[in-house]
Length: 238
Image (cartoon, rainbow, N blue to C red):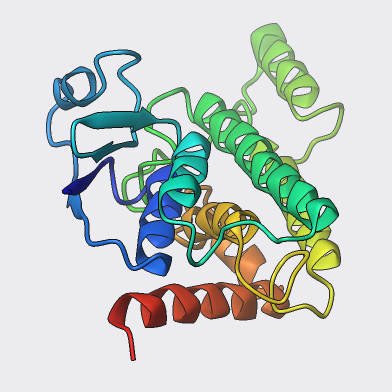
């Protein structure tokens, strides 16, 4: 039965599903959109990608796709056998999706909505917004005050505050991971795929400066390397 993954390769959600397919040794074809019409053509229901086609069946939403893959291709599993660990893994996968998407969208808003996140790389991204220029007169004063409020009551650049928050979420992941090779288990799960996919996008500097934050947390860099080895080794076989 043919398996086709429709989605842009640089998005975290497509990468999450792609890694799951590699890990489960499922042969598949990746089809990336090249024109806006591809989105509703490949997913008439919502127009959102990725979607996975297994034969004639179309499955949308990356998390739903992982569950569907685990049901149809249970070996290797994407959740731990222990119910408590499985619940933690599922919750972390959801947390990674929601938390980092918020930061991607916040940066998009700061950039004036001119970049497509989390699709664009740093080379494609709009330049980070500067505070309002210091001009003379009442208008200049109002602009500076508005910039101060936008920065949360400080004179720091908005991007600085956003990166600080992203760094804190990375620190949360460092604590969650601890000394284990993978999250909440000794082997890869959907939690690891979800976290990896978001870090993969940040490593591409989708939010300018995020790649450097990742470098400063070597345990997360090592974690990403383990996920890559586990999925690519599974794909190539013995």
